[in-house]
Amino acid sequence: MRATGTAIFAEACLEALPRLSCVLPHHIQEADAVQRIIPSLRGRRAAWLVLPGLLALLLAAGAPAASPVTAQPIGTLIVQKQLVDASGAQAQGDLSGYTFVVTGAGTSVTVGPTNAQGQATIGLAPGTYSITENQKAGATILGFFLGGVQVGNFAITAGQTTTLIARNQVAGNSSIQFTKQIVDASGNVLTGVDRSGFQFTITGSNGSTQSVTTDTNGSAVVSNLAAATYSITETPKSGFTFHAMTINGVTVQNGGSFNLSTGQIASIIVQNRQGAVASPNSVRIEKQVIDATGAQVTGASRANFMFTLTCGTSYSQSGATDASGVVTFNNVPAVTCTLTETVTSGFTFDGAFVGGSATNIGNPGQFVQVSGAATSILVRNRQSGTSGGATESVPLVNGCNNVTSTFPSGTAASTVAAGVSPGTGLIAMWKFDNAAQRFQGYSPIPNAPNDLTALGRFDPVFICMNGAGNFNRPVA
Image (cartoon, rainbow, N blue to C red; front, top):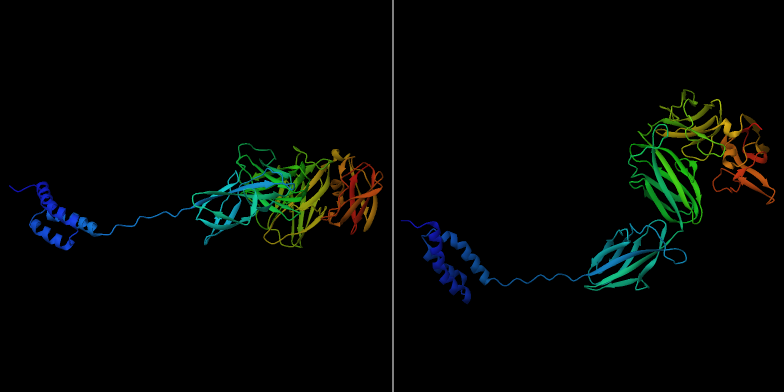
């Protein structure tokens, strides 16, 4: 009877083992050992099973031992961000997002960004290194400190941790709080709408620029700002259009500016509508109703305000605002255009502002339509009841005109100035302050002094023009 495969394999192993026990301990020539073993296995099926294992054992016996791999020893670097104010006292603020470049030991690596606690960690080979910071807007690097001492270079030791303090001085102690709101066509605030991902750019008159993005609650905060004039520009999220912006309760256009004082927390509310962006070569008119102080009147009807847009000699269209206060003119040619409002009974024209500009173009007002642009114009009206009744137009000549403001006491100077038509003709408006025995002024010209904030009823004012115009005021 033929032996089974298992029996043959076992027999072959038993015959081979004595020979291997002689070969392996004495390290005799592997080739001779194989020649002596193979004849004893020839003719047996187990030979082909045992032979590969024998060859592996023989080669291992004669092979030199492999050198063990030794890991390169490293040290640990921790960079800790610290914010201080001008006096050196620790300041609160966003510690995240700072990155650093570490150079030395034949390498240059980026460390960071720092986490919410202001830390960034990396492993480094032993050696001497230098470090620089990729600075963020609003914080100036003062230096890197090791054990309380400012250093230029620092050493990394194997198995040890080195902690550097990256100290920055913040610009100031003022801040801006953003709140995002989504509104419907009537201006009502909607709930349950995703308000995250809206980005704002904050540009300061001191040269600083930074951006911030709203969180899931529609909030964003920019801290440690210096006292300065800042402009705020929103980049709406895809699928949304800009609707309105208020800064400390005052309505401004996208890109509008305001003064931030020392220690102030400015509140900015920005509203958006869901919907497509206006098509190119279009002019979008949005109506806003305000009271005597310039504050927006919520709930006021903004429908059926009539406008006529004339561009060049071949384009003239008229239209009325819808329930949301909007009327859009399409296929507008790229020429100088004139916008005219037929003021609705019970309202007075206050101002027309193109693309977020603070300059009132008047009624009728002119602007240049740019090819491919979607121009946005905000037109404000006052309800007659909020300004004391009917209005009258006082002619103005080139130069300074001595007139009387008949607006209610406490009316903002900017609201009174908005009664000047065309707005581009206004140079300045002056009032003599008897208590201080000096003139106070208001001007739409950038960086001009503006210490005239409000006027009383029947205050005499000087309105200085660079051409003829009109002053629209309430009837006394």
